[in-house]
Length: 117
Image 1: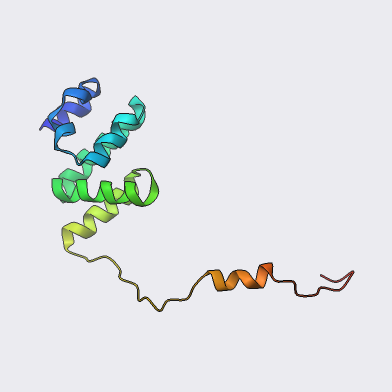
Image 2: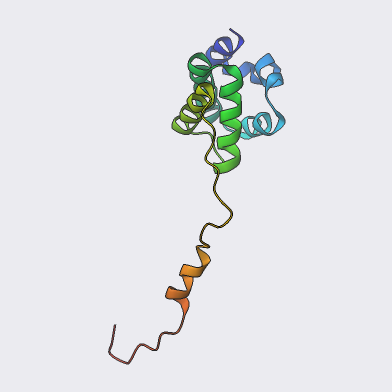
């Protein structure tokens, strides 16, 4: 209910209960956004809360923010749905290839002859 009211009156953000209920990194990011970006993020939070629950919506938005520096609707929606369904994140083995090894092909002096490609 509070989130819906906030989305209708986004200027009340500084004094809202929603703001107080968010984790520090997410709250601080929203504080720094312009009015339009903050309103879009709050609309996303409202939609995802309705579809996947408040805890999943907040966790998803925070995770997307930490990994991308923003809170895009598609990423938040998808991650929150996965969290709501109990789908665990993908765990990668430590023995995965090092992409830096492939840089050698592009940075090593391979002795290209004059006039060659």
